[in-house]
Image 1 (cartoon, protein in one colour):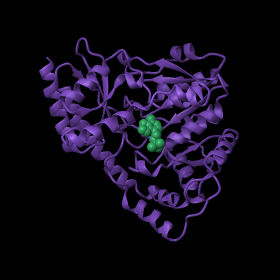
Image 2 (cartoon, rainbow, N blue to C red):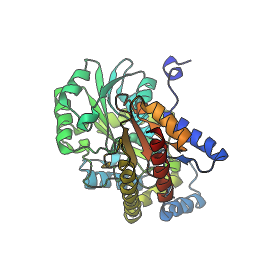
Image 3 (cartoon, protein in one colour):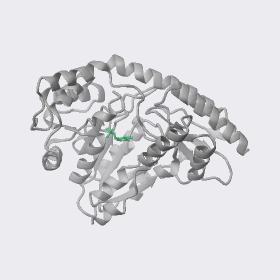
Image 4 (cartoon, rainbow, N blue to C red):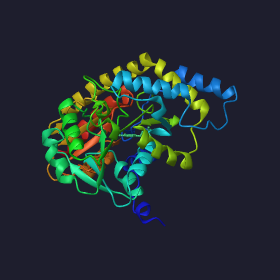
Length: 386
Ligand SMILES: Cc1ncc(COP(=O)(O)O)c(C=O)c1O
């Protein structure tokens, strides 16, 4: 057995999503807010394009990094919207953003080399680094400073084995976006460490409720060491399609693509034909974003009205990151308490590496009705506790 993989913890979000489904079988009033899954269906024109392509017989291997139309559309989007000087020859279409991150990490790290992860962080970065034979070095960003990146913390985490820094903005779970002043700190750090690459996971990019998040790949001085990852799961409601992509400078891209050829061969042609239509669905994506924004305002507003509860409005993604100022309870206990007493399944902050503040993450990619009920149930359960 591979010891690193054997030692991995199961994905906490998948465990809690499954638990919510199990509980709902016995009690349909249980509300699952643990997963990061849009409740919308994929816009029709995307699905219809895939169906058309499928019925036309596009069912063979499509050898290569992706179909030209899709790679071209992705490259144009990255240049236009993100300021990333992307060549379509360096775009790789992957089975979800998760796989893009996995193969990128494998391609960058040698055994024993280190990747810096900024906590609170998505649950899969550390296991992915471990699976690649690397070592995850955690930087605990401070909730008291709203998780701002500091140069001092990056330097303290950096050793002669550091080869990678993983960034995720808009952030899961905190909802923070990357502001220009923090991006400049990352740029300066990279300039001081020319052997360090960055994976910039921008999967929630279009789900922002004010200014856009900065793409670190748009900084020309370091762009050749940035691997930008994105995908269609969250912004276009395509989680079940498993479609993502990455772009990197040619020398890095070539190494990643070698692993892709041997581990995947290629993506499905008809699904890629569907994904081309994502770039004609700005209106539909904007409509979903607008609804998430309304839900965010309602749900976070209701939680903020509970004494001892604080939820800063997230700047992006679709998670409420909530602090509980309730003595004697940590986040795992709070998660368990709300599960048992409110019938609301959320994620404990500890799953993301936040073990100082008692925090939880609730997804607001759920119906407004469920979110209203969840807020009322959480309110009642916490009142009972007081
Ligand atoms: C921060 C982050 N990155 C990447 C992913 C992977 O998304 P997918 O593989 O569905 O594209 C997720 C999904 O939850 C996520 O939250």
